[in-house]
Length: 364
Image (cartoon, rainbow, N blue to C red):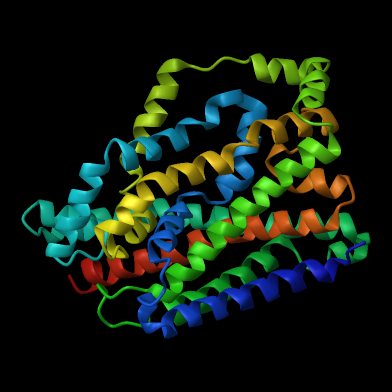
């Protein structure tokens, strides 16, 4: 059985590994010698999937059925059917040396510093609470594992707030070291992007591993899961719950529109783009990623409701299911997946906001 300190130690070693990955990316002639650059670019777009995807999609599915899907349908439509629009935005941004979403909006209105400044303020106000949510999600996952594997006295070794502060400090150091190395904001942060791509691989691998473990090791496949679900009134109510078509359409439209307007998403999609070849690779690889990371959302939600009942915290089913089955390896892997989802968002969002604040508020 894992000890409580092993959870924190694993997180620390994983973050050190990300430091090494980012350093390697920066040393490799700014990443241009990496043959798989288009794949790296496509995986960096998966920064769209934060802890809300890793933990929250299951929680929403457990309470609202298929209502989690619009958040992912919008980006898929944008990057596929809206590909000419995305390609045009990237091309225009390169021609005008755009460094952020605020710069792009300002440039569309005659390089208005007022439009860019207002856009920056809105981005800051909207993004900071979401950054806090990522830190809370990571901290909660740490507390959940420590509480499960440790004695009560050990579980109180660190509070939720203390863990959040430690995580924030670590990610701040990472951001300073690899997100602010270049004086010119138009230069590519290849080391940082390589680390983000690795985190994207880790989080989808972790989520799929949890899904496979729950479906075929905790249960005897989809048929067994379905039979047990049909025998559980709470699960039947969840599965049979319909959805508001109007609300579904509005959420899909909103996710379609904000895909490129989110500061972190604009940064990785537009600012960090090297060539149209990367966009063409992302056109099919990014949608495939979104499909893959959502394949087991419903099975995990159903399994959690069967095992714990509806009053349980469904947002943590990805963690609590493998821990309840006593599988330490899957539990730790799931924790690292959530850590990857939150850390990538926090770091890139901070870099994007820093560029916007310095260029459009401090020195417009």
